[in-house]
Length: 429
Image (cartoon, rainbow, N blue to C red; front, side):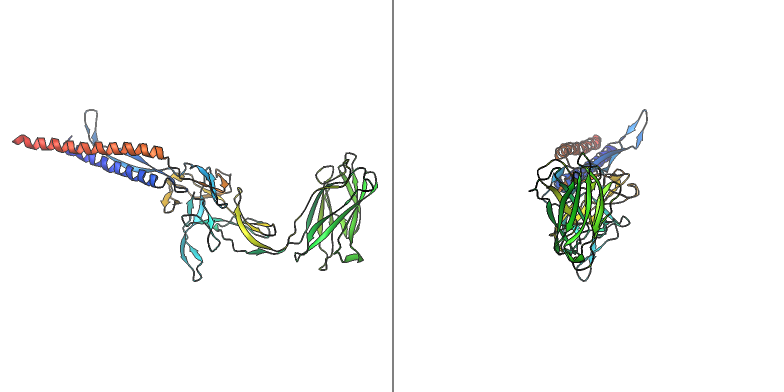
């Protein structure tokens, strides 16, 4: 045991408390930083000699305690592209490593991860957060909707328009009256589109032949086949309870195509560019989910939907809670262009911190596992929100007071040991 050893121990205490001050300072400075993960301080005792009869002063060291898995508060954002993760997981992001001659970004081969989800679009159409990191996702085939899970790439919106879509399906939800009157209007119209995006009126007309027995005729003033506007007709029967019973006796450019449970017919109008197959969905047999025959005073059309459209220009981009990034167009169409998965780690607290609230994989963190939302431990998304810093200011201020007092106490040990050494040296006088 020695006074010099006491001074050495106290100096290690000063260094340890200085490290704690540094972590507290970092936390408080980033208490308002979106997606920031706080750093605690773990103190470790190192011995010189300690037995049953003797204990010499040792030293203290510190190591950081990363709190990467501690959830921050989810707060609403005015940005519709902002996304907050609830539960475990990180966004996969890329960082810019340069630019091409045209100014397009080039990306580092290093994969980064972050919880900072305040994404917006930059001038190149990429989704970028406030730290300048580019959101990675699975590309989606615009035509088929198939998700390519074999690669993660920076998400970019480049398409400024979508071509017209020819109508291939019309679904009708309506009720024909069980006892129609002479004044009943049993005709309705809906617009459908050809391959050029031109709208054409499709007219449905119901004629009762006998109780529970009708003829449905479909026509269009723009139909040029068969020498008239009529496309075709089909016989429709209903059950006593008013649900659809059967379809049959098709005429013209019309065929019954539904399954044993689905009441569907296919028409083939010609608007000048050849036959255009269109499936008319009348609902399920023995179900009240399409065409019905219930008691009513007139023909009631509840809903008619069709899947065609004119050409559309890009209007906006949005995200949804399924992780889909969607491009919206002024013709009402919405096209999924990418899907955002989440990346999880066996020990996320051991990720390596990087600039901009980002992390990289380490040996002790475990390998990155990319999963769909809400699967294999990955969390979910809250769209239009961000995850705030997980720093608890009140807790940090309490720790600051303790660290300040401990630092002062260690300094007092040094001055006291110095006084004792001075007294010892003065003994010879």
